[in-house]
Image (cartoon, rainbow, N blue to C red; front, side, top):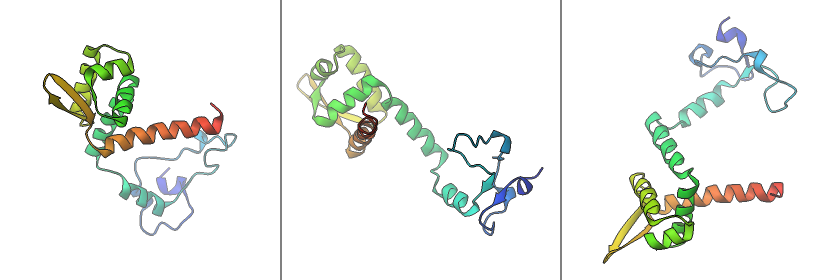
Length: 156
């Protein structure tokens, strides 16, 4: 069965030939109408697909962003970044804030530096860390704001 015969077009496929919409095939047997969160008919909106595909970032950017999000996903690193989102702190202060050893803080900070999330300055023998730029702060702030909104909506 070809892609053209297994898909219902809700909008005339003027801009995209259904054969070019690869490799995803819609399998009507996988659609569970009881869930209410999936299409109840196999259909395709070529203009929407074209717009979405045009908006996709380059693969290398997807890989880099994914790696960045994995780094931020670690609870200890997220707590370190949250603390640095408030103010610049030395390694000793960060250890006290998050409750881990200075050695463990230094290890995590090295990884955060590699991913360009934090930077530091030395003042004598003390290393003060801060977020590298507003993007890092925005990333942390948005993630935490999102979960706080979810908690407020669900009462959790």
